[in-house]
Image 1 (cartoon, rainbow, N blue to C red):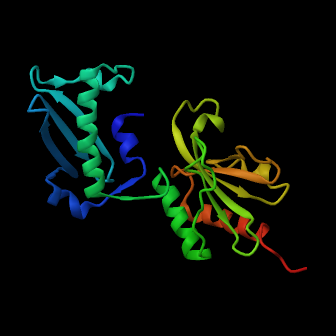
Image 2 (image 1 turned 90 degrees about the vertical axis):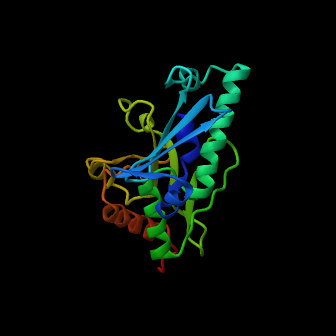
Length: 229
């Protein structure tokens, strides 16, 4: 994961603030160049139309990208000072041009907002140890039972051919016996770290429409509720 992704991974760009900060419009996005370390380096920051922020550092002496910054294993004193100064610029942008969001993927945040609107429940984050601190659970207020769990994982834990791409997934309860048919839908897998007979994992990367995911949430909510006999 690059420096920019680490700093902006749970941030949402507030487009009403970027021009005031100093970004200029550039096609469908915004662009900013800022010199640092007494003009020896230049930070070049771009925001695309969806709010994704990317950047690079230019060595002003040779007008080329400063390659050592892209190598995480490079940790000499000088490289570290350049990295720290660049991170300060990015963190200032994050503070002044972004708002905090709960999860990494935008669809995960939309689903969390949809759950709150429909059921009045916000996620809680019960784990302190890495890498689970950002895993959010949705619980019934009357029973404290989970009906949803959002985690950020490598997609390869669901699909061995997916590589190391990290995504948000949502675990939901299902009726026993429906798993096989549900697994045929793109974006639905046997549950990660939970009973495959009773739970599924839904990939929150846009593969499934929000409406379909909320239908599955409704089933999980019902199955985990305190039902009258």
